[in-house]
Amino acid sequence: MLKKSIFLIMNIFMFLFIGCASKDEFPQLTKNPNPTMHELGSMKLKGIMHELNNLVFERFYSELERDELRVQHTKEIAQIALSIEGDVQKIESMSSELKLNNIELKEFMKLTKELGNNASELENIANNYRIKEIKGGINKLVATCNSCHQKFRKASTKGVE
Image (cartoon, rainbow, N blue to C red; front, side, top):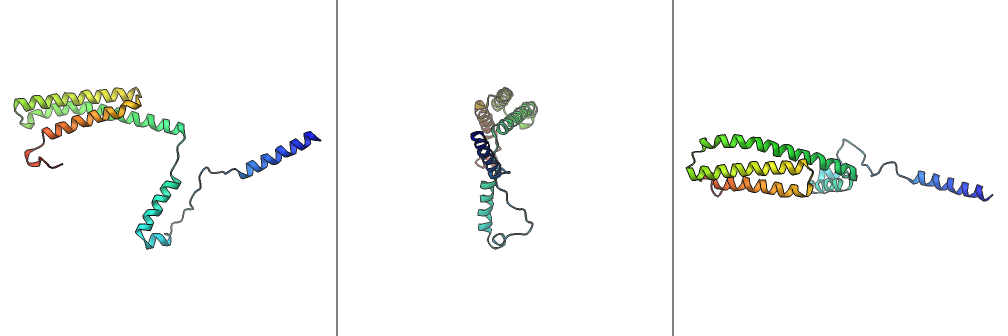
């Protein structure tokens, strides 16, 4: 009798658990091609509802999905850094067209070499998945770009950002 009671209680528990379990992890809005009244009446309200929709129904990634995205983004960063390395040679070949004096040319070539080194370093960081170092590598790369842009901006555009 005790075994039957335990079996019956466990079955009831199982059916309740299965019946109460949600099939979808998150609630879904019904799709309707017709606009709602608030969408027609108020752009501000439409914006608020859009933000609410994004917040409530935003896709929440699992830890594995986040890892996959992190790897994908890291590969993209490595590809961009590799592309910049290739662009450095093009930039160097353009130096004769810039009509720079010897001092400016020397500085320009120094910054171009620094850009190549920073891009190579960033590519190495990304290819080795040293995630915590990527931001610093990107910051160095951008700082080199900004430094060159500030020093070699046309006189007519100085002060214009």
